[in-house]
Length: 191
Image (cartoon, rainbow, N blue to C red):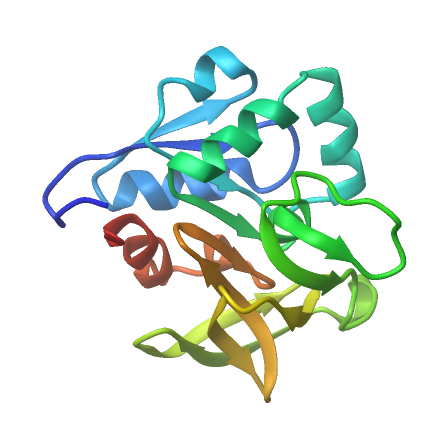
């Protein structure tokens, strides 16, 4: 996408979820973080993060804002990262649901695969070339199937928790809830 020194205008979908945490991570890396609530704001960013939160609530808010078509188009042309609920929004198949949300990522995802809020936990794993990365799982989903054009970029105890298809990234965990900025940095440096 850009060299390390280039400042990027990074949008964070600001309808619900961990918006502030992603904006802070982007800003700490020297980029401009922009809350995105509508299509006009989406047009001013070069990359987009769909935060963790509650995917069903996010979908209702996306429908109210009439943002789904614009997000589908954005994902074809620009980098997009979905974390936890954001990963569910990007997935083309959701276990137990007849339809998808944005549906631009050729994966099957299972909501709350690690259990309820009470089963939330933290662990460590690898994300691409990043070793020993802190992973925070809160009502986390799990990728159960990946299409042929999808690269597995993160696993936790042998289970797929991170994928990439072209410039679309999806993570089952919350990198924004750690002090470690390496995943955000890697996403924003992609070619």
